[in-house]
Length: 296
Ligand SMILES: C[S@@+](CC[C@H](N)C(=O)[O-])C[C@H]1O[C@@H](n2cnc3c(N)ncnc32)[C@H](O)[C@@H]1O
Image (cartoon, rainbow, N blue to C red):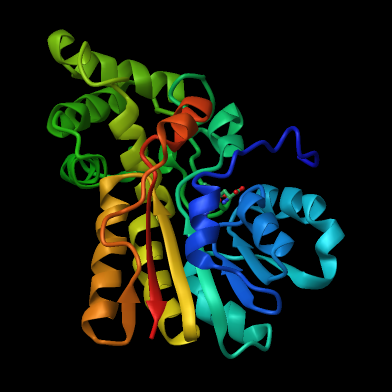
């Protein structure tokens, strides 16, 4: 994966992210979710210096190529953003002027069947953003029925969690579950027909839940937000774009905690959502919610 065209991703809430991060020439910013580098490029165009993190080696390679013209002001590191503090320290920085999280997956990841994130196309049940550790297929093979039900309920808010877990356990006794297509079939069989006709694709919540579990996404986010707190210089800002209620709740709680300590000011009383024009041009932006705080 080396070309921009193959590694496509339209940055979401780009103008709002820049308004709230307010990058300035000479300022140091961490893009915790580099992806295709869209937000980072906008920070660089405004004169900032960027440390860009992504756990996905494909993103690191593609963004490195895209941003090569800014080589002297951007450092790209393949790392989980829970390691934010260590990475910034290892690069020799003590304080930074802003951190950005644009959570979830890039379009490239979703649209590559080989990565296993998509329920619309058949592919291996992988779902690892960083290509290391256990795959979704491993979790489906190893978790007991109760644990499967908990994952689907807690991370997918899937009301049919118990039935889907039971169907997975019955199916894997017959045959290992290794492809997205197999899993979609199992979910279809588990959800009663009347319920299947409502609320979008029947596999959406299960896929979200497994992805969160495989990548330990919620813990990653909590640890990273906590790590950013002591890194910020006075006047520095934290900006987070989340895509579902579990992420948004974690961001909201962390930011309110910072504000209640008197150390930060809340910049977004309500989360910022995309305008209808952005949603029309890029339907994947639909659920985006941006929140921001400033270090006093
Ligand atoms: C929505 S994309 C970011 C897109 C980017 N803002 C752009 O404009 O191109 C999210 C990226 O965050 C990365 N990511 C998600 N969780 C991560 C984590 N815990 N640590 C590091 N990178 C992570 C994913 O691999 C993905 O490339």
